[in-house]
Length: 286
Picture 1 (cartoon, rainbow, N blue to C red):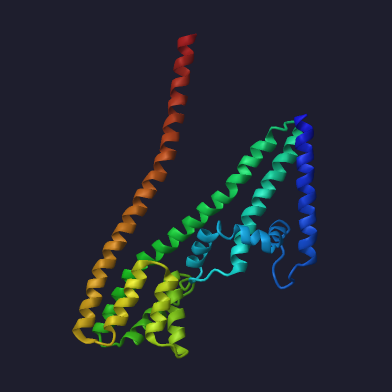
Picture 2: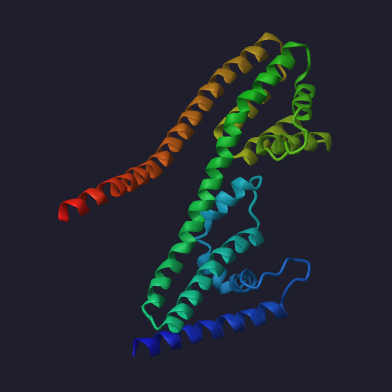
């Protein structure tokens, strides 16, 4: 009875996937990359009723994606991320059902359903970890940028020229991928197009999505016009604050690394105990 129910459920899921695949293929955008697993889910998500119902659930992933991509998360990006999570869940469910039918173990199907429900949560955790790494990377690099800026301002450079030279020092191969300098380049390009320093720095702080970057931008805006010793003193005070933030982040990363090392050490200890204790236990029983 259970095997028949599992077979009927798996057959319905397979027919549903083939139907979505057909609909997505008929309406595909040839300018976008086609994926046999994710594209049908993208087509499903683009249905107005489904997207509207899931909109409230996707607010937090949308905010995280916006922080990772310059403060903007388009509807297409959000649908793409959601389609990947749903596609992986659907694949897990179909694979578990097929494996259960082939092996004669229908109980694998409900087990796969539980795993399929956990896949979106795992994707959300992965997105959160990416966002944390993104913010930590910016916080760790900001004091270095501020130190270089201080040296150039003390040497007589104006703020804009100093920022440009700081950016030029990071234009080597593989270095422009750093999120802080990517956003700084976007801000300087905006100023070059005619935007004001205030608008560009405000956008820089928003796109970085960390309080330290907003603090850096605000200090530049408040003190750039004053110049002289007041500006240098403000930068020095900000530098001390940012170095303290960097120490806190470095301390947190060190604690996380220690906790990750503890688990394999415990496993190695248990393995050694088994290897050493098993011959002793066997000799006692003999």
